[in-house]
Amino acid sequence: MIKRIIIADDHSLFRHGLKAIIEKSTKLEVVMEAANGKEALEGCKKYNPDLVIMDVTMPLMNGIEATRKIIKECENIKILALSAHVDRKFISEILSAGASGYLHKNCNQQQLLDALEQLSNGNMYICPDITGIVVQDFVQNIKDNHEPQHLTSREYEVLQLVAEGHSTKEIAENLHLSVKTIETHRMHIMEKVNVTSVAALTKYAIREGITALE
View 1 (tube, rainbow, N blue to C red):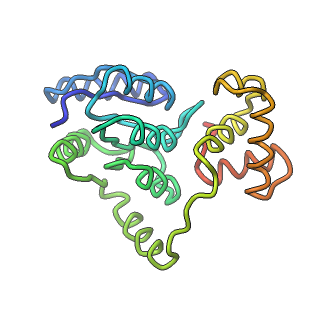
View 2: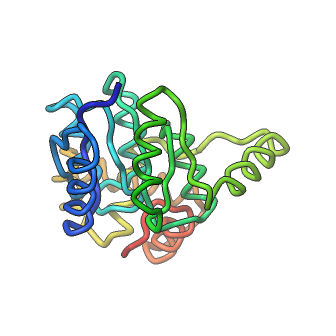
């Protein structure tokens, strides 16, 4: 049963609106608002919520990577992805990372409440706008035998921060690693995705849904 919620979105007005709807229409409590995936992960460890409403594209750590880490490091927390994107890549990645539901940001209030109820009952929820995309992706994955991701979790973190324009020193400080380690990660990432410049790396990150640079 869902009782406590964290809302993670980099737009404060949107977070406040969601909180108002949830607390007015349900008995659920919003225990924290997070502006990025890193804050959401820290909040899960601190408050142990039942559910995180997770934006897919956020700075510092996107919703996909945050979902992976929350599912891995925290027990019994459900993730409801909420995004303006209906791109197959975003949907597939966050559901594969462990999200239990996906809502488009143009959903109405009742769809949000339905999603919360379904997840509270142990079910998944996919909004009608993207059901067809999810089914098509599932069928395609069966055909392709779905190859695993070839970047490590740490490499995904470094890639997002590089693509968002952070310097090597800033990334090292953010991830509590040495500058040399970050440089090594960046070199390995470039080798794996077959690019030779930061500009090309940024384009790759955007194309793969790792960052949207909104």
